[in-house]
Image (tube, rainbow, N blue to C red; front, side):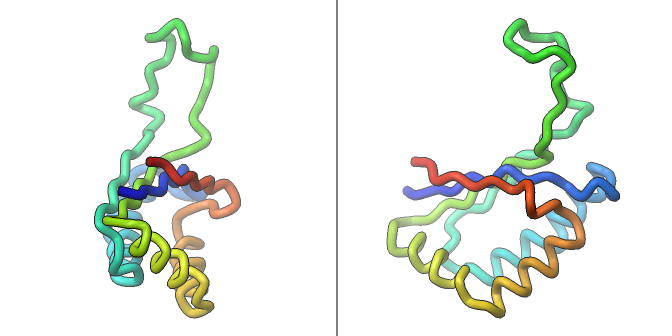
Length: 116
């Protein structure tokens, strides 16, 4: 099952809680409505209050995460993934997503990976 992982940062002007509320109540439903081939859409929030400072010897000294959420997009098969990418080239879809993202995330910091 093909999957994409996105590492996403919130806008500096909003709190972690505001970021999560907006993502769950506005952005996630928008993405699900725009991309019907999604088979799974999971978010794992990386809040500063949950950072394991000094708890593990492998951690960097004073490290702070530059990301606030790990988002996983899952697809049943390659065809569904390809339809996702094709739909993502539609100018109207791009404009809708970018306009919504401007409300809560820093799009320049987003990193996406394909994982198996």
